[in-house]
Image (cartoon, rainbow, N blue to C red; front, side, top):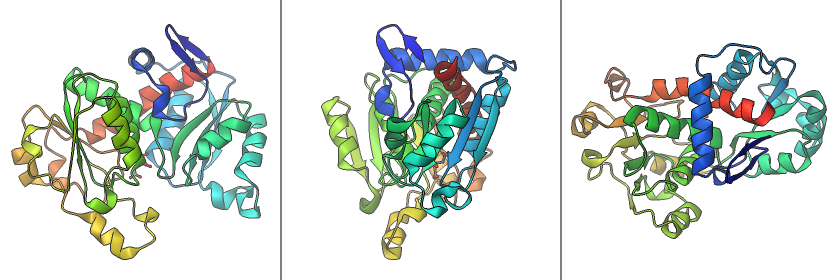
Length: 308
Ligand code: NCD
């Protein structure tokens, strides 16, 4: 467990709500310090990755982070099919068992609130690696770290969150972190069916964060500092026609890039489907692959703070 002067203990990572400015500063300072480290400071510690939904970056960057710090990794990448869940075991029972085999559990699940349920029964730290349409706090940390590294600060920025804001948990978690910084302005760009949900909008209002809701990139793009694109979360739609309406016209292509300010950056948690034209990749403002790289350092920092 880690303590930071003036802030609460970091005993699990479940939600962006847990982070205040001193804790963010502490995580980012550790991430910068650990980025090039390869040593044995977590030797003898075991991390279990328990993923009930697919993942490339999140799971492998956690595993890479743990291995770089000398720890060991066990896990299952299709926990629904390849764990006792298929026999009807509850998440709670699975977590109780895995708590006996590992010193920390990184959990991805398809239900919002799953990480909190796991933390309620676990004897070891739980890290929420995405809980359905709920949150993805470690992604939000690496996103905020990327914004800070690329642009030098977060205060005063205009950030447009685009795409599927209803089911896209990364945008929800990032909006919460951005709301901690003075003079940040947000624009939520999405078709109505996948606009940001009222809980986050109410929180922005309560924290005095000015925001605009729109379905078009048109009026926004010329004045943003960060254009944060997301994938329509196809797997969360029950109704195919709703999915079609969710696709909207927020695609980022070369013509959008021509209107984006020179200093701005384009981000995406990845995986990308067709919401960013690959022709954009060679533009130096395309920050999404640099963003993905930052995931390892952030996760090294979290593992050290949770375990050391
Ligand atoms: C995202 C996720 O799983 O929420 N990916 C990630 O963790 N980098 C985004 C997505 O699936 O669209």
